Every structure is written in C-alpha cells, then in structure tokens.
Length: 172
Image (cartoon, rainbow, N blue to C red; front, side, top):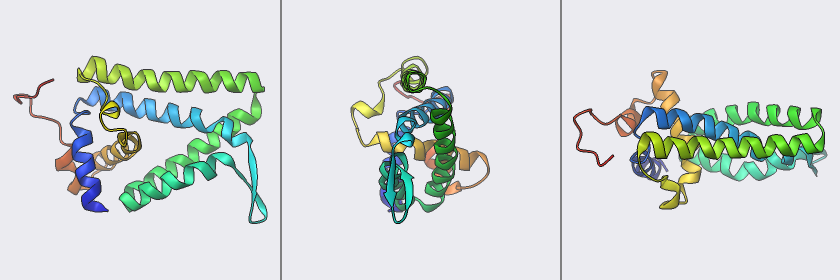
C-alpha cells in the first residue's frame, strides 16, 4: 500500500504546510484519541479467556489499517496508542463517572479546537477533512511521518512532507 499511502499523504500535506498547524495537530490528535477512548476503556469484553477493553477492540481495525499503510509508521502509532490507552484507562479508573465524562468532553473539545485553530489561523484554509473525509485517518500517519523525518528516518517521505519554499506561489 506504499504508493497509495504516499499519494494520500501528498494530498493531505497540501492542507498542512505550516509547522504551527502541524504542532496544533500533534496536540489535537493526542487529546482527541485520549478523550475518545477514555469512556470505552471502562467497558470490558470477554475475549479468548481474558477481558479486553472496548477501546482496544474498536481501535484495532484502524490500527491494522495504519500498519498496512506503512509498517514502520503504523508501529509507531501502535506504540503511542498503547501509552494513550494506559493514560485514558488510568484516568477513567481513578475519577468519578461525572468527572470522567467532563474530562472526555474537555479533551475532545480541546482536540478539535486545536486543529480548527491550526487551520484557520496558521494555514488560512479549511481543514481537509471537509473535502476528504478519509483524512481523519491520515492525521496520525502524517504526525508520525513528521516525527520519523525529524529523527532522521524516512527520507522517502521527507520530499512529500517538505515545507513550501518561502518564495512559493502558494494560495495561502
């Protein structure tokens, strides 16, 4: 799926050129994921003789999709997801139900707000999600690709994700 992923990423990056918008997406995606899985970590489902949280079961298809798109980036997202699942389940287990739902609402609202501000203020255009709904699934891959490139890995993706030159004729 490498060619498919690279084509999708090339379209996605056109809406995410500004580094400040990218930073807002890092924050937004982490908050959204943690908030979204938090209530689901409380629901346990018996599976093969043990209990698994509904959060893991529902996230599994998209985690597999990310691994299929790009094994290295997908593995990075899987590792981060494990940490975020742990954080979400710890918070949910330590607070009252009302507090957990308040934290859920705050995390989701702040996550969406961070990304909306990134697009409106720094990118100067609407989020790609409205034109390409599939970009909801590309955000984490984009962020992980940026991290890999910053660490000196994935030079094959660096050209796709490179910032526009300052003398560019971009429509931003």
